[in-house]
Image (cartoon, rainbow, N blue to C red; front, side, top):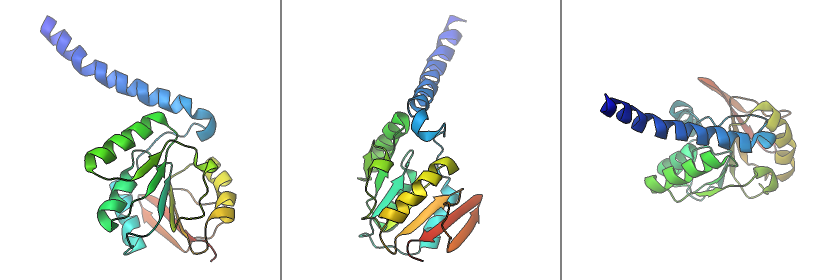
Length: 181
């Protein structure tokens, strides 16, 4: 009986610790994210998006705003050889992204910074999976900073004031925009 109890505790305590880290990471960035949780982009969405983007050159400059666990950074590297930059302010998601990219051998750069403080002028491709309240603040920043011809992809929610050139329906919508069109 004691072995069963210790075995159960040995399994449950690490899970409880991980859940606590996730909750603490969310609370620490609550003010900036408005309570948005870290949710990974599904593999199906990533696959559909990459197919819609077509062949991309490894020289394409790519940024993932709120990169979560870095799943899209890894997919871009595997499929096109693109070394992207990810921004993530949630400490739990940041550590997870760094660890998963390291284990996968993907040398993408992941910054634990608020992307609102970053200049987005040098990127050819900008991806975001953000809630509408954050997109409302991001839309004018992109109008001001994104370079002409840059492609902006938003998962699940439209970018306010922007007209998409393509909307895919893969589970939820994926919106594609081009600066200057």
